[in-house]
Length: 97
Image 1: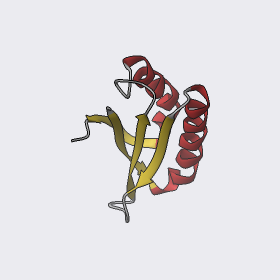
Image 2: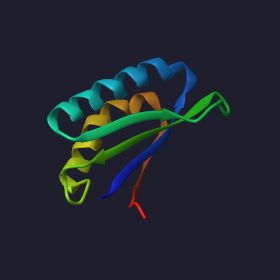
Image 3: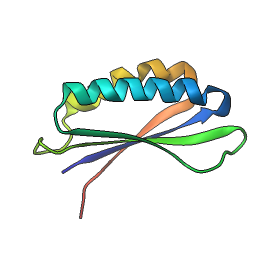
Image 4: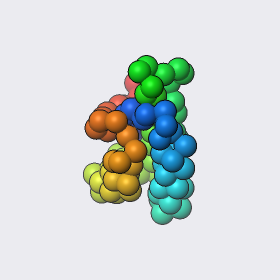
């Protein structure tokens, strides 16, 4: 099963607005995809007033875990984060061993 990890930086002053936006679109994605697990994590502390955040996604009913269609839907949903984050979103795909 494929798991998706997305990390990026958020300026501390945008943290509350960004958290609300991520929680909103992750809830919507979970409603639209039975079995989708979506979480939001934050690295402890800050560097230069920025926090490092990570979204994780796992889709258990799907044989490949994360279809290209679902990945594209996640990125479309996250587009509203662009003015709230500092730099690009980095997407990594991992397989369990």
